[in-house]
Length: 324
Image (cartoon, rainbow, N blue to C red):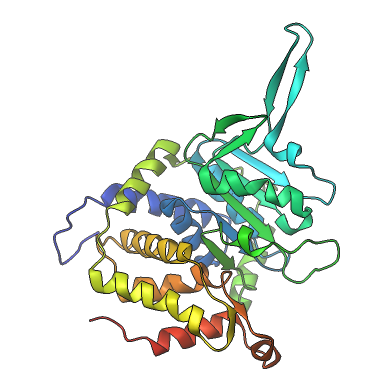
């Protein structure tokens, strides 16, 4: 990749790794470029991602493909109404030979965790994720167990079905770096999907996927992203955007300070993917939507008007002066 400036950070390993990841995912996933790019941003930023969309739009498949492209531990947990916290975290089991209790690790003890239909499990099971998502550790029976890094959670949910689901509380949502909304494919993309299924000889979409980067490389890429430069004016710009969500007349709930941190991290990852060691207002504006949309709540009046969070974020971005 050629640039017109001399980069202060060697981002070529990261850029090559991202290209390899994209190539692997695009072997199977047709279109959904925003979904793929945002998943990669979340990995590079060391942040968890909530993926929302109707059934059949490759939410789970994309997360699985990404996990299988990275040489590290992978665990998939299907959330159901009868799932207990111990089914995720693990439990102490009595060993008759040693006459002592031993901790048996649950599926959360891995590197990349895919949680399918996170809103299907009751509140106490959802709450079991709070500590592990925020601090990369769990505390059970007075003992602390640390997660092996990298540790990232990708969770899916269906926005349409309400029966048999438990809405995620704001405290839980805030622990996700971003909420990725997945749309239907275009007519052309759907035709390509159909052709791909028609010509594919192997029914397993993961069969041809190769592990193209290691878990250690992910940690190195995350370190590079943290070094991406942000001018003071852009830090003020991010602060102004997040602060405006708390003062906007159409919002009942504004974004938390955690949103400012994640918006900066996402902008840094976006810049690094583009081969730049500095962020621009475009990076901030682009990442404002996935980082903020699940952290704000519309007033009843705004909802009655048929507005949505994406429209409000757009209005906020239009109101704030862009730094030059």
